[in-house]
Image (cartoon, rainbow, N blue to C red; front, side, top):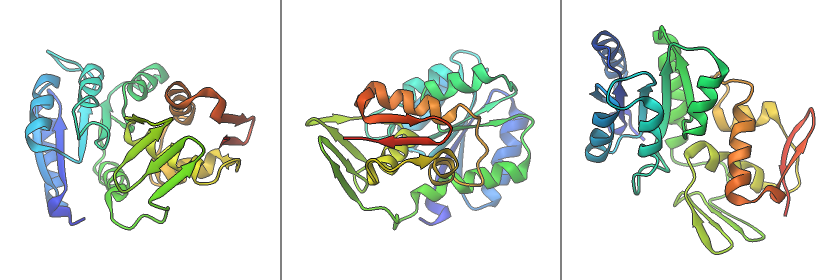
Length: 228
């Protein structure tokens, strides 16, 4: 996908941060929109259909956590949308809360331009055409359609955030194969993306709730596998 066709929504209540990020990402060739709070972010997302949202956590009217939860519910947008939190906090609970709400990743403030651009490029790489994975994966009662970004389990369609979808796709691509944690981080989050140690665990727990605990086996000290 051409950069000029990629739309990024920046959401922060600090004008200086919005201007800084908007200027640098626009210079990279992306189409950039801005919002000052969570409520405005939802309205902009509905009208602009962005591919990626950089979302501040602490904002007036509606904070980033609530906004993320509402963005994930938007029809034909929420499940494919990439959401990254901007946070000045480094505590694990903030990062986990963001992932629980449906975020794909987070960037800590103060934002460094090289880190910002690198992470955005890495995340958007998932939008590029020509995935090296099969477009259709069928494992028992599970069907993963990568072209349509759709999950069918026991005949029922499941709506998954992007990272949950990619993690499930990876594990289901080779049932009973143990994927090491390092491999999962590289294949799902990209080797340029730095995520917390509990990131995979949070996403696996979410998948267990939605697809079934019996399908996900933890291999202690190694990683995870999908079992039929």
